[in-house]
Length: 284
Length: 269
Image (tube, each protein chain N blue to C red):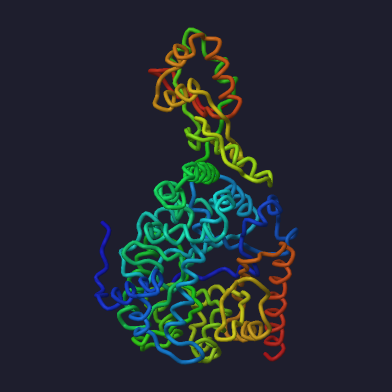
């Protein structure tokens, strides 16, 4: 494992609603340290989104986060997609590239969703092989993110956290640990969120996601449409105790608020992390 | 050389096919439920329905964003029903949602929603062209000064590179008027049954459109195919009129390069 991730600080997602106020923005003017761009939104020939991304990149570190790689699909890897992603990465020079531990297409039909995998040896072998090929195609550090899920397959024989850790180890990639997704899936499937964190290899957790979700009564739904709730903040503090200073990002994709609200949520993440780190230092 | 996966994935492939069918149709959810464990407050089928509703909702939202005037014209329920029929006929074949509506204008043309409303597919085609221009390729417009450096005797041999986002469209109804009324927050109404030619392109970050007469449309199509300016002059009957057209196209940022045939390309100054 040659790659040592840089600590980027605390960031937010780059969203169209905030484009006009981000031209010429700096970490000092926004209060955020870095941005994450949804890769597919910028894998376009030209226009305003790319201009804004270029402007943001001049003053901030940027990470590319994809939703359509479909790493767990049994379809062949989409090399045209990978070529376009690589071209975008050559333009943006991201700190790293990430996507999700899921599948989203079969027989070349795309669901545009993050569909869950059965956690089997068959899936594990497939994902490991494909991550290795994706890393070679992109030529950049690559991370896989755990998704929120609502089903468990009867075939599954490996706990999700062991599956993800094993993919990261065998394929030599990083983990983008979505703390909200751990919380949502733990509730929906009845496993321990702390056990999930305990199963993560600390040296592979290179980024953290935080987001809001909704309690629909029968299940928790990963809605990305509100503030991070208190139990997820507590889980985040636990993650910081385990993994130390990890680049952390607030995701907010529906009912997107003013940028100042996002920046405040990011600052809250920074405060939580600093408190945990401070307590660690006092104990040491 | 691109390698195919050597991993045996027969079981996983069948699972994924079964799951995907369950996203698409209620009928397939019974079979797919057998793949899922129960537990908690949800039965396997209900768990699959969460994914099925997300599948449709996400694609519907993308179509709503790309075809806002069509949505306004046929209403929420009509649009959602159209989207369901469209998705059944044309499941998404591209990793990006940007392309999910590529075939909607053609689909609308033969769909029952267009019965008695033949201009609906033209409105959809206009909206699709606007989306395509919005994030189409970049090109710097040619500055008019670049032409002043070329002797008048060579103008007839000039060939032009047009802006890569430029689309030349022809409709049998004045759907641009419906679009404009809706955009102004007014009722769209019915468009006049009138041959309408439009050019759509992007300048800086703004998508522009302008009406064209038959002559102008013919000339721009010819330039796009590589005809030289002498061809335009013949079509315009007078060099003055051709020069006025050229000045308009330059002013609008439609021209991004010139070439003296045979010769070398002049880049924007």
